[in-house]
Image (cartoon, rainbow, N blue to C red; front, top):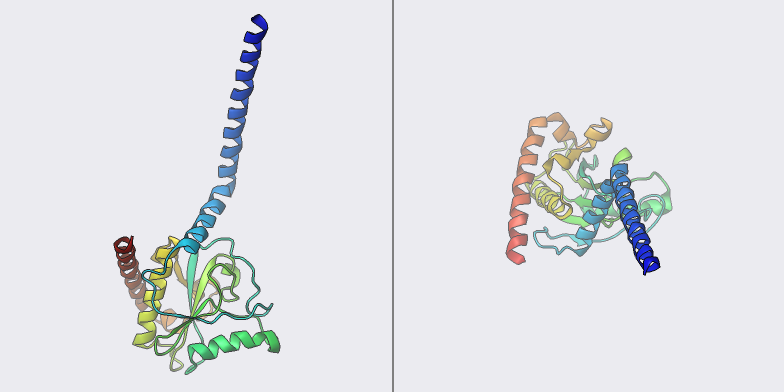
Length: 227
């Protein structure tokens, strides 16, 4: 009897020590920045499982995997959305998509974008939202990129381009758990004058962010109504 009692006591102590060890490991794991990594993975998982409720119409025309425009590298996390302009007046969304794809043969440079919005508001997706695009320099690893076409050297977007940009950005924010403070210009990453109109007119950029906020709320309503 005495021997059995001792065995039970030893078992209890072992289980208690195991439980304490697990708690210590979890504490170190979360404190060591793993929580941020876990949260980012949850964002990506959420996006993979999400519907397209609230999304603007867009065409999926993915680039071929190649080292110059679509490396196929998985995004580790999504912490923001970067807005660009093409700096190629008069070109269409498809023109820019085809240019990105052609880099696999020309080897001219390394550049691409997840989405391109045309002058008429058409949207083309070039790279999956789970992969890296060569668009935003040091932020390639944790952001999605949107290139916008424009008619002239001022970089001003047409109304159609602007509305599609608001709708796409708002939907992506809702889909990935972001808000308007996570939406930035290429200029904010590197100092490059891109997108030109919104670097030259910062007050218009603030108005754009307000419109994105409103669009996020609209998408949230649509998602709730559909659930």
